[in-house]
Length: 188
Image 1 (cartoon, helix red, strand yellow):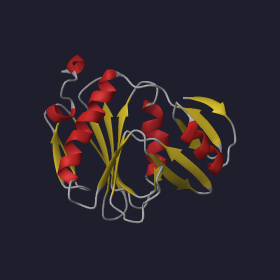
Image 2: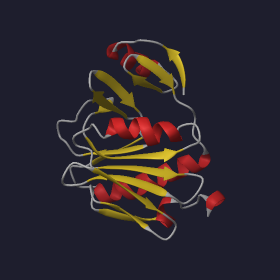
Image 3: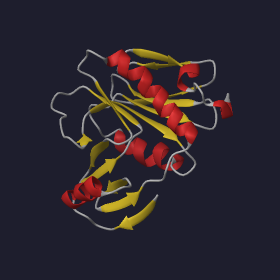
Image 4: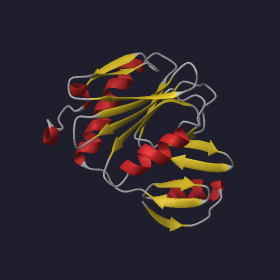
């Protein structure tokens, strides 16, 4: 990600995003332009949304794709990220352009964002009290990392491969790798 404008207020940032043709993430006053996504990335996100939406229909859970921001408060810093997929069920999480109480966040890894997703975002997302699971999906190989909060508020990591299933306890859903990677021909 490349910095384009420095030190905006949250209000200025939200106005910029509302009128911008490209998306930006916000980290404590600094704004970073988002890179475009590959075909594989888009297929994986579409597959996840296609599985989550019918499963959650008729429940208080709401599923959002790449254009919905998540606001994170880390110490005194305000941060806005654009996760690839997020699920929230808090009726008070009703801001129109961002959410603050996701239960599940999914990121599809790319070469340009992999390090940020695995380190910075993971650590910052883990500050969200409502978050139960953070899922990282590789687009270059059949590999999924899931970070799950246990009953003692510790975060445990599990790595899944081709023959495994992804169990999402936060929404009571199990997904196969074939479902996640459907139509992603390059790695199958």
